[in-house]
Amino acid sequence: MASRIYKENRVNENTGLVFIDSNNKTKSQLAAIWLKTGLIKYELGGYNIQSAGIKVANEPLHALATLKQHGFKVSNASDKKLYSYTINFGSDSWNVYYKDLSSLRNLEKSLKVFVEDNLEMGDDPMQVYVPLDSPETIAKEMLYVASRIDYLTQSQKQKEL
Image 1: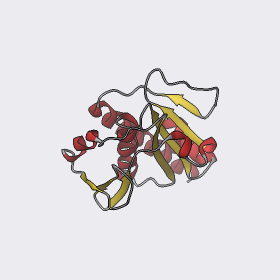
Image 2: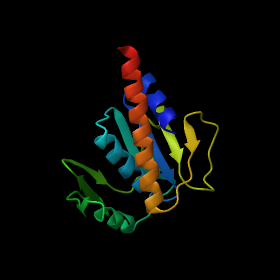
Image 3: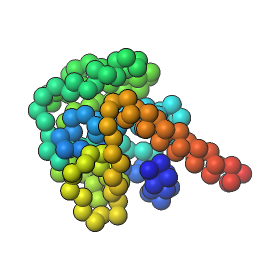
Image 4: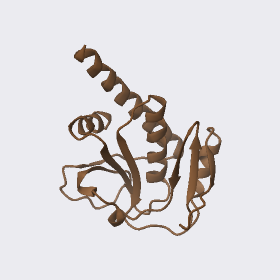
């Protein structure tokens, strides 16, 4: 997955990446947050990371509570969206809220990562399936992906010297 994300970003700067699950409640939200965090750690920019659901839930995002034990600050966002949160990590922050896949713009230019079984995928070459399970596994996998993207980025820089 890291290689695919890296290659797409080299071809199309500011590559869109969307993690997709059935209801945008846990797996896709955590995958996006942890990958953003890893990319921040490695100072890698140019990646537009989002999460979305086939349909959206309408309840609190309890999975975000797991982030607090890792140094994130999670608070209710001040905007008008129901169940909208602000995530702070270090000097970076971003808003998290439920998004329906059909509401995203430029989706055809984004790499779509399906993170759950039983989701209907079409033949779009810009989609992959990566099964994710527990919040701990999601964190480890996404931080590993960020480290691999960093490795590929550094290797390319060395070749260019």
